[in-house]
Image 1 (cartoon, rainbow, N blue to C red):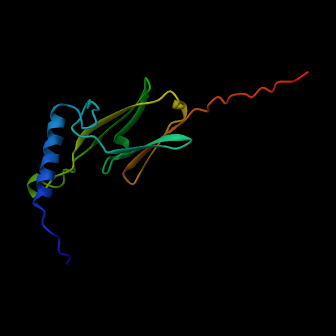
Image 2 (image 1 turned 180 degrees about the horizontal axis):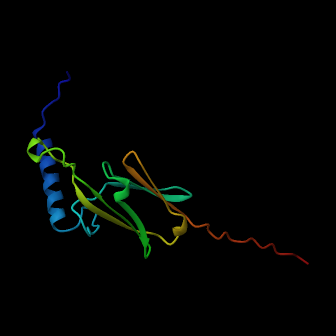
Amino acid sequence: MAIVKYNPLRELRTMQEQMNRLLNLSWNHDISGEDMKDGIWQPAVDIYETNEAIIIKAELPDVDQKDIDVRIEDNTLTLKGERKHDGYVKKENYHRIERYFGSFQRSFSLPATIDQENVGAVCEKGVLTVTLPKKEEIKPKHISVQIK
């Protein structure tokens, strides 16, 4: 068994992070400043860009695929859904509940360079991957000048 040095400040830091999270939830927005429309939790996301597309990956473990709604309206991508609590375990039998349950919603503004007609979404192993392909850019046409 490995010996781990006790650090009392780590517990204090964890408690401060939890308090900040609770206060941010009560003021109806999260740390990044995004407004929370509905629900009490938001899935963590990674957003990155390739030459062909912008990719959004959202962590949605234990969310049934039929409970996920992905839409684009007015250049805004919205992820909505619900994580349902398993009712087969009684509440008094739990030692700790740290995961959030209930509805969630995340919204992201899309740049004009996204081809909204070809957006794709796949959910695999609890990770929703939304692929936002970029429009074909109009390449400048080279015009050669003839010398007479």
